[in-house]
Image (cartoon, rainbow, N blue to C red; front, side, top):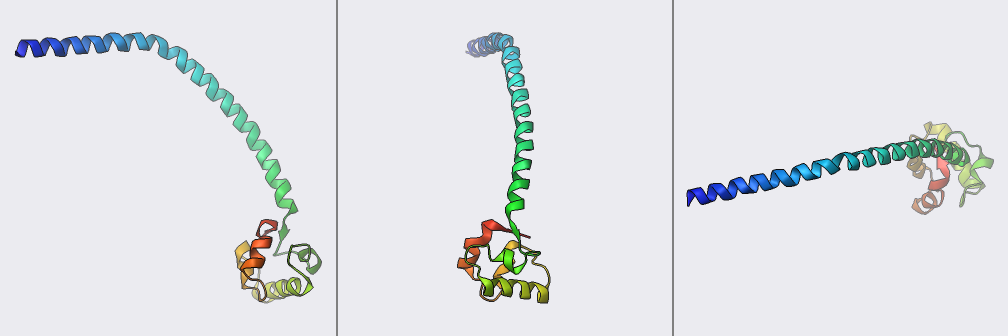
Amino acid sequence: MLLAFALILISGVLLFNIVESKTEDKVPAVTTEATSQKETTNNYSSEVSKTDTNFENTTKSNLININTATIDELQKLNGIGEAKAKAIVDFRETNGLFPTVKSIINVPGIGEKTLEKIIDDITV
């Protein structure tokens, strides 16, 4: 019985080695294709990164910086009239620059609803 088990084990190992050696012949072709595909992806990623950077710069330049905006500039924001714009500037002059976009909520008259309206249009 031990001999039968040993023969089965040996034949399994041999069968595994045969299958493995046949697949090794195919691996370089797959690896080459994968490498080529990876190189293509890397080239594409580089181009996308350049485009993304340009897009971010364009997008960011359209945002209103709440740390430097004038009353007139702040009034361009949805839901910000002259009174709220003046409150933002007064708050900024009294308390210093806004550390984050969301910190504008500390300005009297600016609540969650106003923040939701303007958050995509402002920066610090």
